[in-house]
Length: 125
Image (cartoon, rainbow, N blue to C red; front, side, top):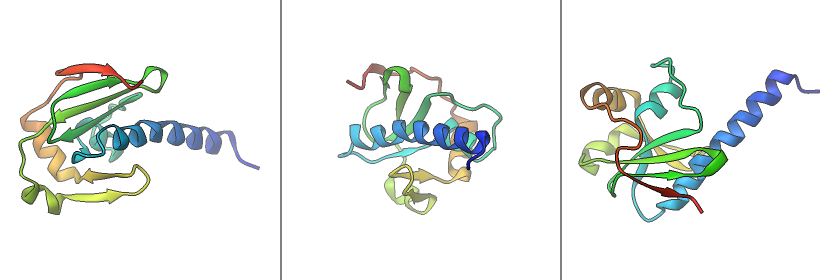
């Protein structure tokens, strides 16, 4: 028998993964990776917990998708070279995406904070 805490953690993590899985499919042909508040919050570096919002860096254009009750997926354009990023990324099979290391994200977060909704927007449907 599962405790209420275990069930709520499972439900939260399953719902949270929906945005990651959608993000990996929305721009499957482009290189994207979770970064900024998403990674720093997951690692416990910042106290804020983005609720129903994930932020990914992309070589594509900045854009935010509104996915209704599931939340938002924000893509933020980066000019960083893949050669520089390669050693700072690891594959997260749970999210089905490459993920930035905390040191990489922290350097970028401190020097260039971005706000949600800084680019275009649309919906996931």
